[in-house]
Every structure is written in structure tokens, then in C-alpha cells.
Amino acid sequence: MGTSEDTFQRALTDADVAAANGLTRRWLAARREIPSAASGLGIWPLIAILATGAVGETRDELLAAAGIGADRAAAVPSALLAAVREAPALGAAIAVWAGRRVTLDPEWTAGLPAGAVGSLTGDPAADKAALDDWAARSTRGLIDRMPLDFTQPVDLVLAGALSVATTWAVPFTDHRRSFKTGPWAGLGQVRGLSATLGDVLRVGPDASVVTLAGDGGIDVLLGLGREDLAPHAVIEALFDAADPGWGRSATDLRPGERAVGVEVAEYQSMRPQTGPETAVDTVRFRVTADLDLADDAAALGLVSASDRDRARFDRLAAEPVFVSQAKQTCTAVFSATGFEAAAITAMAMARAAGVPKLKHRHVQARITFDRPFAYLARHRPTGLVLVAGWVREPETA
Image (cartoon, rainbow, N blue to C red; front, top):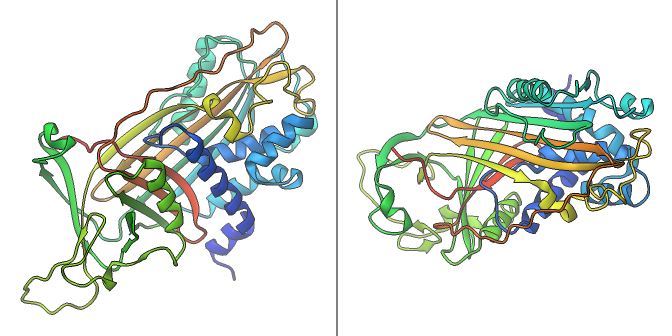
């Protein structure tokens, strides 16, 4: 009899995992700055659903971004939901709401997960309230709103929810500390965390990565880079660290040796050492990011899809429609006892006729971070990346 992990992998193949992780990696690499919290996996099934309703250039761009073929795009949303049902630490939901101004193609809706299709009333306040409620129920209360602007024309909403909650195998000690030097010196008391763990630290020439094991098959990776290393490079190191060949174990370092953020020293104890020891000193964090995915149209295959004149969703609706909004809200919480995160990704579509063409907002400002401090949560058995982000500063006491 198969295990739940076997069922997960039958629902979501190795190729699916590689495609989803590939979208996450390309998307983050293409952004001007790494968000404090983001989920490429939250976007991936929505891109696949859009592709099943698109034709021509619009479909080709979406499939290329998703990293899958047309046949697999039709199966991915239900496959993801089926896989998540076998992972107790994860939750996921997908839904579509249509207004009266669009007539959905029956074949397209038939390919959606069961019970996914609902209706919009046309009353912006009522629709916002209903979709906000769905967001809260679908993320275990971590996110209480749908990240869309309902003052704009909204004829169709496609949304996905993803959540993860895991408890550490070895909890941290929660304490207060302050930094005497560096950018965090002015924060005063902050929430520090410390634990003594086993062989959880790997080091490379440019970064060091700690892998923290949680229940439900979830790992959370923390990456610290050289002071001059760009945040994008630290995130890349976290993806690379999934390969057992990346870097080397800190257990190979001798007393007196150093790596990025790592010192190896000897100390005296009344008890004999029974295995590798890694002292991990980090900080609690609670971060939220509101992302406008229109800024990432090229990386996500949304260039044609979001162009009123070029979008072709002939297999989705009888009327010409285009993606008028694409947004994500993502929250992550790292504490002494565990990690939890949630993402709501939403795409609004509007009828092309009579709708003014929207301009994409360009963000040029760059945030100056402290020492590079990145995190990534993944499903341990398959390596599926769930959430990733960049921590600018810790929680204050």
C-alpha cells in the first residue's frame, strides 16, 4: 500500500515540480528586488488555467512561462489540489468568479477543479466582501483580503490560495537581544532565536545555508550571504542548496576556520559530544508583501494576455477579455516554534470592448537591505518550493 508521499508524487510529477520551481526561480530573478514574501507556486496553476483558455501567441507565452505543454496545463490545477490533500502541512484552493458580462466556455469550465466556479454580482462592495471572505477561509486566516482593486472593471476573477504551517522538530529559544553595530543597531530590543542543532549547515564561498526541519514534510532554508552579495544571489544560493553537491557541510570545518557568517570554535562541557553541533542564532520575522504581477509580465507570460488588443482567450469566454489586474499578497511568519505562510494570487479579467488600456506601473526604487537574509520553504519529499522571500529586519520586542 502506498504512502501519502507516493500519492503526492503520483498527483504532481517530478516534471511538474521542476516546472513550478523553474517559474519561481525565473520570476524572482527577473524582479528588480526580492520581495519580503512571494509564492511562485501560487501563480503557477493560474498561468496554466489561463493557458487552457487561450490561443495563439497568448497561449504560447503562458505555456512557456509555466514550463509545461498544453495537455499538462489542463491537468495541473486539479493535480496540485490532489497533491496538497496528501500533505497535512499544506492547504490550497482555486476558484473562478464570473460576472454577467461574460459567457464562459463550457469546455473551459469543465476542465476546472470541481466546485471552482462562482458568480460576481456586479456590486463592487458585495463582490469584494465575498472574495475577501474566501481569501480568509482559504489561508487559515493569515490573509483576510483579495488583492484586487474593485473600483476598476472586473468581469472575471481567477484566484488561488496557498498556505503552509509547520512546527520545528527542535524548537528555538525565544529571547530578546540588541545589535550594537550595523544597520539594526538603532532598532533597540528585537526578538532573537537560538537553538543547537545537528548537521544542518552547509557553506559555500559566497553564502551559508541552514536547513530547518519541520513536521508535515516541510523544510525552511535560511541563507546568509557575503555583505556585498546581492539579494538575488542569496536566493539563487537557496535554490542551489537543494542539490546535495552544493557547498560542503560545516562539520568539515576545523576550529578557527570561518565561512560566511560562520565561526568554528572549541568549548568545554561536562558531557561528551555525541554528534555534530550547530549553534543557530537568528531572529523572528513577520513579513507581508503586496505584489503587482503586471510588473513581471514578461517572466510570467502575461505580455499578450494583459494587452487589450492582443489578448486571445477564445477558448475561455465568448466575449474578448484580457487580464486587467494580476496581484499577489503573501505573508510569512518565522517563530520559535515553527513557520507559517500564506499567499493569495488573483487575476482580474475585463471585457476588451470599451475598457481603457492600462499602463504597467514601473518601480525604479531599490530597497537597501541589511546583511543578506533570505528564506525559502519547500516540500521536503519532492523539493517543491512553496514560499520564498527576503527579510529586511527582525521583529522588534
